Image 1 (cartoon, rainbow, N blue to C red):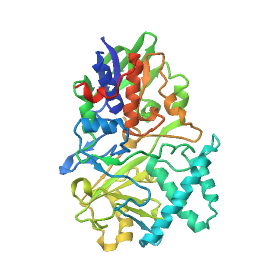
Image 2: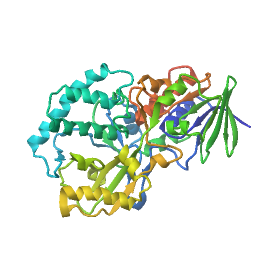
Image 3: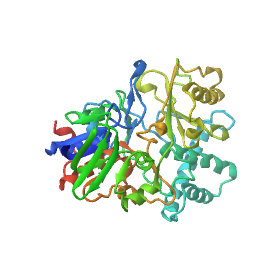
Length: 442
């Protein structure tokens, strides 16, 4: 039976980060990856000459971000693409009223001001929230404090519902009151025209990564860890487990003994979301060259309410929208053509005959992926922000859980995955390791 210093389960950014730092410290490390590629939920499709990030797309705030530093060191070009909720300078958001007509600029500005007012109140309301409050509970209190009429409040209420879906792929009543505490970002947001997957590819260079190795059993004890796959069993003094929350909860991977408290408790209060991308390419940019995003107000926007113009990435007229939360459940099992038809019905309501048929459509299916079970994790009602870090509590001194769900400050992001992998490596080595060694050790 092969004996290693550390087995890393999962070749996403968290696993590759831990493995690269441990390998650089002279440890014998193998990375076991179920898929036929590295990257996990960082996945770039290059079919038909297009570059499409089907998983992670953005760095949400480059200031002080290790992923931004790593991508620069690895020579990955970026384009600034700040996902604003309101009206970015020079790139207007096209807001459409419930009747389908575009809001004039003064009305759009007034709406943005209303959202800011609620957000200002919301911070204090969340701070005073009860343990079992949902995000719906706290937003309703913040709305009530404004003293607005029902129509005015309804527009902001639906915006808050949509923001919850777009940020965490969850319905507003299912998300904990503190579930969006990490919403603020520092610095520009950027995307990768060459594909985000160049990051995990660079991190994997020089590592022993074994693709197609589905881990079925992890047995841990004071003596180390035994990991079983269809290719055989491996032993190691330590292991880093970076599979998503949905896989940990799914039952296909057996961990013996079962994960103890506080890890098990934290795992039970997090869950994977339903959040799918819909990328549509068109013959022309019928929504206008200066439009950064499109937002639909009112009941007509229940399913499709926000679109983002990705044309600047490659020059091809492209819109991105999301099937999130309830909508993701509704379209489960639909083929791409049916999804596109549903999206286009709404776009034609706004743009009429100018809204041409798309030349291509891509729809993700992360929730159906047995090695993901969703796009990322969120806090259910009753969870606390500490649950993220508690999930990473070392088990028996030999088993370390890492991944986007295990980082409190900025969960559900690639930086969270990277930082959690860095933490796991430091705990195994028993000393501080500069994260810059990820891109400076060669």
